[in-house]
Structure formats: structure tokens, C-alpha cells
Image (cartoon, rainbow, N blue to C red; front, side):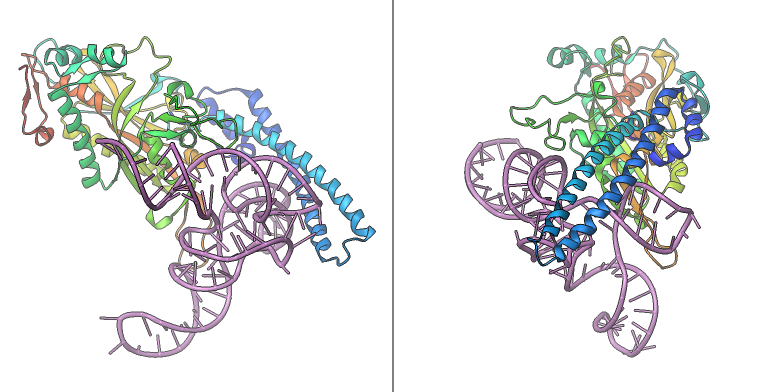
Length: 451
RNA sequence: GGAGAGGUGGCAGAGUGGCCGAAUGCGCCGCCUUGCUAAGGCGGUGAGCCCGUAAGGGUUCCGUGGGUUCAAAUCCCACCCUCUCCGCCA
């Protein structure tokens, strides 16, 4: 989902590689790429010129400070000359700004390059099934979907959700509400106590700058809920850096990845791993016809997220590790699922390599995404300015800071997990067996049945 | 909602027009000395960008943006943020 950006130097110096990588994602806008190289060249030329002028001005100004007689004709003359230099600098700075703005706009529009191990393909048909875990539950009867089950048990109320908040909102009730809460606690406990993640409870309203860091902005604004604020809150929006908008977070990835924006982490602390629960909000613009029934696609949903920061050389292994942690949730819950590796064209905008976890939904007779685990390379770190200082090899000088690699994955989307449990654990009489791993969180409840 | 204070390098904290990318202390790194649950001495220690094979050089950055000036951390304007006190509130 996030955007962020590629490295400007890398792109301009390795244009052929970049072109090839983008092509694997179905990107072939040659005109934009040539505008990019042009803007980069202009920028460099202008910088060389303006810096030379600045050097002159600095040297002369310094000398002027030493002159005793500030009333002399010579002083006045130099001052006039320097004033002229100042104007030239200003003009060049404007050109530099323009070139950089153009460059940035293009760079922000380019998706991340796929990792070499990401398979070819332009859409989901190019995804590769990696493994299937467990097998379809042998129900022995025609499975009902979670809408029918949840409604009959009176644990999900779609009509009242719509009444108070509109379509794509639902109310959980009784054992349904408890189950949602149990899943949240179960997942957070698993990751924080067994998988070594530090638990985070983040704010849900986030600034536009945070959304830029992970890349939801500027490209995907239509997917977000923006807060219409009180009078005066954002009256200075037009100022470049004054004021800020607030949005409802679409995923905890935003808050948690941005925890370390603008920071230089100590290399010996890596990898850093966080898990966080957050309510998530998505406008779901452009998906009007999809999954209109049920909990699958809501405007508000709950999710436990995993986020990792690591050294570049560890990125790929960290992705496998993180994916394993997400899979562990499904395994402990005894859910049948599969793992697919996303092809170049089906990955999110920022992803370098990614896997989806898909859980089996008997009523739909198919696997549905319940988690997406991605490795972003330095794509997000560049925008969010998240760096680390490598540990000095055997003493010596401090190495230069480098961009970290970021990863994240849902573990899991709670609403969809609830759906999967209802459907996979349903009984002929319409009751639901509570997975053993959750019973201690459900007050010992073993079965959800109609009352 | 009312009143006030402040934003400087990893942290603390000086600095009110040129000698300031920035004192001092702490922290950190290296070397030396020493031996008793440690201390002391010396040196080093921000980031981005541009040129350069490199060595190195240049440039920008003292919350953000703009302005004044030959020259701004320092003067002017606006904004953002943080903290304290009072009120209110889960």
C-alpha cells in the first residue's frame, strides 16, 4: 500500500536496471523516465553553478568583515557587486527548486523495484503458491457463510452497524465481541512473549507527514479518511510546513514504522521488532462492488501488525522470519491456509518482495487474504529517513549512517480471522467450536451456540 | 478554554550581525597510564548534497517557511511543536 521512493542517484546512474525492474511490474512510461533524467541533469548543473557563486560570496563577505574602513568607496563597490551575486544565487536557487520538485514528483510516482526472487507476472495470476497448511475441514454438511452464522447466533449485527455508521460497518455483540477481543489479546501475547516483539499501543489519528513516510500519501489519498477538523485547526494548511492534516490510520504500519522516522538507530540494536494493535480505517474507494456482504471488507477493522527494522543484508531472511510469526497465529488457531508469493506486478507499490497468507473460507470455497507480509528494502526508510549506524568493525572510526530496511505484515487481520473461525469451526447445528488456543481468553468458553 | 516559558549537535547547555557548524559538560571511539570493586591523561567524535577514481575540496543545515543585509543561530514576520500552571474532561 505505501509508496515512498527510489534512490535518485541509483535511478539516474542505473537507468537500464531501473527500467528493467519497472517493466516487470508493467511500468513502461519512457517519457516519464526521460523527463526524470533530464531533471536530474539540470539539477546537477545548477548546483555546480550556484555553489561556485556561494563560495565567492562567502569568501568576499568574510574579507569585507575584516576591512576596517566600511565607508570607503572600495567597500561600497564590492557591496554592490555582491548584491548582484546574491541576485544570481537567488535565481539559480529557484531553478534548483523547480528541478528538484519535478524530480521528486517523478520519483514518488515510481513503485519499488521487485527483488530478483519475486516471480514475473503482471497480476494475481502470476502469484506462486508456496505451501498449503492443513486441510479443508471435513464438515459433512453444506457450510454456511459467516454472515448467516453470525447473524443467527446474534453475535454480528450488520443492520445496526449500518444504522449507526452506514454500509461496511458492523457491530459485534456478546461472544462475537469477546472473540474479537480474545483474538487481539491472543495475537499480541504470542508476538510479544514468544516472538520477541515489543508491544506498541499507537495513536489512531496520524499526521499527513507520517502517511508520507510510509507512502500512503500522496498517491493513495482516496483510500483514506481525512478528519474534518474544528475551525482553526488547520487554517494554515497553505504554508509549506505549517499546520497538518489528520487522518484515520489505515494500518498500524503507518504509526509503527514512523516511530523511528528522522532517527539514526544504533546498529547493535538491530533488528528492532514491534507488534501493535490498531483499529484501521479505509475508505475502500473503488471497491464498491466487492465483498459488500459481511466482515471481509469494512471501513473500520481491527488488526495486529508486525513491523521490523533491520540491516539491508538481513532483509530477506527477516521477511521469512516475520512471515513465520504470522503463520504461527493461523497454526495455533488450527486454521487451514496457504502461502502465496506475490509476483512483481501484484505486489504493493512499496514492496520489494512479498507473501500473502490466505485462509480457507468454506462458504466461499476459496482462500482469502488474511495477511500480507512485505519487505520494502530501503524504499520506506528513504522517505521516512530511518537510518542506522553500523557497528564499527573492530574499532576505528564510526561508519556512516545507512538506511535501514523495513518490513511488516499483518498477524493478523482480526475481522477476517473471526470470519475464518466461524466458517471453519462451524457445526451442523450452527454453533461454533472455539479453538483451544482462545478458550482461556474466552473465559473457558468451548462453543458459541445460540442462546 | 485562560496564562506563561521554550525549541541549538546523541544528551545537557552557552551563544544576540562577520573571529560560530557553533563554547563547555556528559556520552561515545581510539591511545596512554594504572592495578583493587575504579580513576586519570591525550586525541577524536553531526547530517545532507555537489565536484573528484581517490586523497580531498566546496556547499547547505541552529523547529519550519519567508524577509532585511555584502554577511543571519544571532534582527523582522508568520507558522508548527513542546513544556508548566489554572479550568474542564475519559
